[in-house]
Structure formats: structure tokens, C-alpha cells
Length: 166
Image 1 (cartoon, one colour):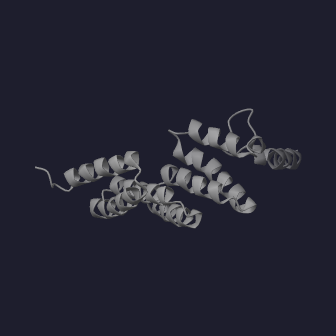
Image 2: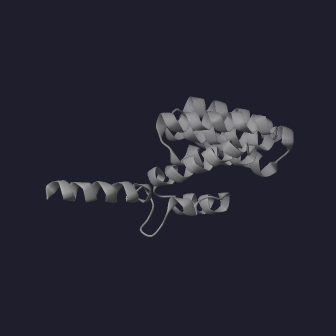
Image 3: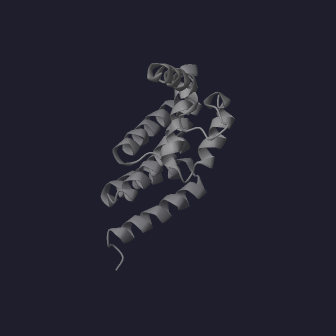
């Protein structure tokens, strides 16, 4: 009798395993086969980064498989803000590389600023300041006033953490 139960338990687990991941009750990962659905799900898990990373990784895999450079970049951006510590830094580096490949100076500056925020969150203020200053140079070249002011605000904030303003 126990062999019979074990057999049915194994059958049940193998048939349900694809649906037991991080999906919510009544939700299947196959529902997230397009970018808007994945993006919506990632944003809905804003306060649950570990769960969001399941969908972020799906987003990145899909973009890489399709060779979609814009969505690879967007996936790395999602990953930068939904992962933690060392992995977060690696995704930040990938974000910078992908923005350079896109040949979009504003996106490169934004990627540098994102990496600066990662370093700031890890209390590495010197490195954060370095990335923010690099981002500011790019924003000044592109004359993007909003991003220039965002970078300047970030610089002031970092200098406060470094004790420059007493």
C-alpha cells in the first residue's frame, strides 16, 4: 500500500512541479510570455525582490533569445533593483555594457547613475560618487537638464554621507 501511495505522490509532484514555483495560486508562468505581462508582474512584486527576480530572469532570457537589445537593457535595469549585493553589482555592470551597446548616451548615464545608487546602498560612497560624476559628465554633454539636476542632487547627497558638509 505504501508503494502505491508513493507512486501517486511522485506522479502528482511531477505533474504539478512546473506550477509550484513562485506563481500565485491560479497563476501559471506560461501566462508571462510577453514583455508587458512580465513587466507588470515585476512591478507588482516591488516589495518582494526575491520573487520578482524569477520574472526578471524570464524577461532577460526572453530578450536574449530574441536578440532584443532594448529589452535586455530593461531586464538588467529590473535586475539591478531587484537583486542584492554582489549579484546587484554584476547586473549593474551588465546594464552599463548594454547601454553602451545601444549607443544611447542618456541610457549610459542612467546606467552609471543606477550603479552609483547600488554602491550608495552598499555604503561605498567613494565609488558611488565616482559613478555619479561620470554620469553627470554624460548628462552635461547631452544637455538633459532633468538628469543633470538628478545627478547634482545625488552628488550632494553622497557628499553629505562622506561628511563634506558639516
